[in-house]
Image 1 (tube, rainbow, N blue to C red):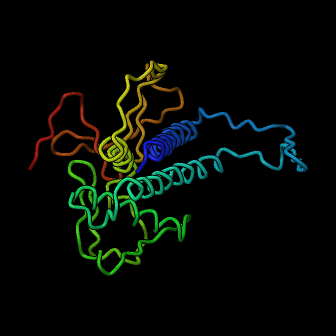
Image 2 (image 1 turned 120 degrees about the horizontal axis):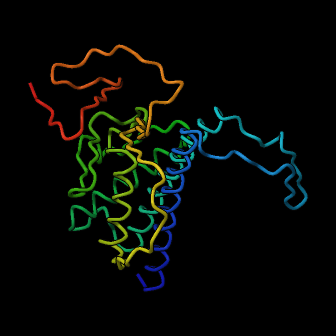
Image 3 (image 1 turned 180 degrees about the vertical axis):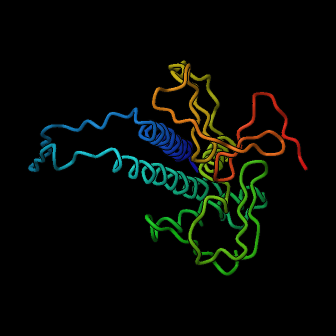
Length: 241
């Protein structure tokens, strides 16, 4: 791999990371109804022209589309990683480094799942990769046991943040990108905690439209929020049974 090829692959992975970060910000803003949905009242591009009513989005449509926008950005990271590893490592499937082998196979299998059916991806695991665990140390792990042909699920490999971490791992560990001092960026305007798809926003006062509900606390004092999520007071340690 030449220096030019290396720099090109680094640039592609960083673009994929930036797109994922932007898509994640857009999805959060759309869900919280903070994302403007303005489109041109008239848009001309080449010989084509559309009016506002042809491309305008309802809030429910934007929320639906934002989910797939983030998913597409996640898929592009996998595509970028697969190509970057193949460029940097001759025959990555047989690499002496188990982390490199695992990173390549995970990126390749996720890429394949999306490439063949981007809106409803399914795993297509090669026979020689089935019933195995591919793991990049402290980054990501994929257990292929019994998943061939079934619907793609983030729980199989750890989710979008696991892919983001792997993308950075490939960029710094395999491509040897240099970690530069980050430039300053705008501070957050709200305190937002997100766990999976559950979003918690800190407010200064109870909203006027809030409805009080009766919730039975768990034996350890936690408040069940549904979907396996439990809310605890600050600094309270969970008491295991």
